[in-house]
Image (cartoon, rainbow, N blue to C red; front, top):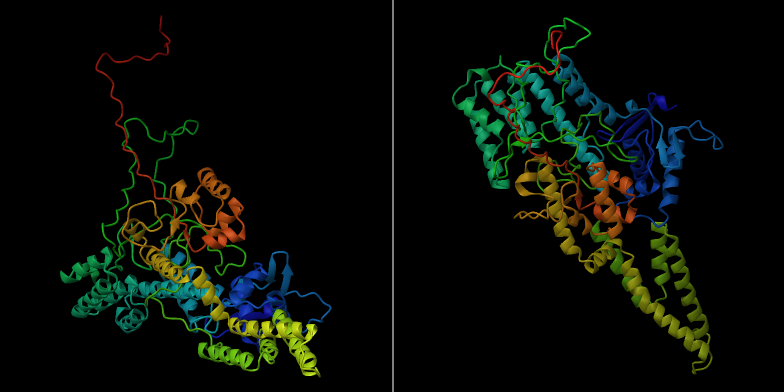
Length: 619
């Protein structure tokens, strides 16, 4: 059954069984399916589904609502299954719900695999195969994914796929430039530069295509436009590779003509958004076969020159620059329920370092803005809240039960339904006891009923107001100092975006290092792999024993690559990881400078030293 299912996420969400399209049901049911498809073949905990599908205000009985949507999906995905037969496609395991479909059934997974195969073929020099793979992968893209879903989960997955598409477009353009198709690429590159204005690799390709098409003045104008954008918006200069291309165009370097290979970034450099190079296996130097197999040749025979050493990596400039250095590669294992399928070892499928956590949507136009779903508008929520409050106030509490009951039915919250029953009981009791009294004197029971009615009337108005989840969240934010927290959150998002686009900002701005003097405010980010022990001890949400456990584990077992690894290695509870998730970043430790090689010891002058082993003629 699962082999006949096909799903599309790159654009409108659709599904087919064989050649028959499937009706996936209402929006929330589609969102549940999207979460399961992003983790196809891996279990997703029910709590994570609730958090992803209802990011702003989870339903009170979230587990039951998820079960309802899962039952609807089972009917859609397995229409011929009888109710008594166990489900085979969408099953429940100890770790959560598991969608048993092959990765090839999801277009997003095929897209990622096609881009990875294209990059591998390009690194191996098989340009024709690489161009065919990346072109086939880009044909799967039908539009921006998850255009009906909101929340950090879908925003992160959407941004990751958009970023991977940009890397695929850059790879295809580079391959077509190498094939001499610069004339037909100019128009497409102009559109791509407008869509991704700060991707330096696309600017490099546009300038190169213009120059090879005989439009040198337009190539120089494209450089001036990009340099002005970086200076005005971000206060930085173009990277070294683009500056070098600009100088070579000015002097009409003949190597830039169409017959030459496309210019690449220098050693140790890459452009903003440029994918990580796939490391090739080192080639062993050719050596003559040993004359005596029983005695292999020494690694460095006496008198032979020492083996060549790799040059030190270039250091970052003093100021923030778009020139990027290739960081140390970390392999991050996929976690259950994560929206990121596991990349192959040594490769980062998004074209960014694996140690940089996927950023949220940036604060400026590097990525097309996403659209929020058409839910309840804010003005309608305010009007409903004000109308409900006035209804409870002007009816003297007699209609408070109706307002709360309608809200409970809409939100499917049994707590609100029980509160409505209480309000109705108080109103009916007041009418029966006080309205049926034949004397003007207030008896003891009547006084108690009046007191309960007054208290319920006064308390019902703020209760109706606080049913508005947005208002309740705002009040909680005021109580916890949310405005200050929001400012810090925006600074952290911006700092993560800088790390994502310009990894050299790690050293230039000292992001995540509160222990070092610096002028840049990163919102309180902490690089857990680099800060000293006293910073870890002071992290919020960690007890002293937990902080000491982290310090000892980091010393004994090395750095961390993700929050999930930190939580699993140090056995941190969910409450601690939730408070740390927005603060911690996981950068690889900076490589220690190699010690200077000591000169070989020289023998003191004197007579030659004879062998200590007695020979045949030794006395």
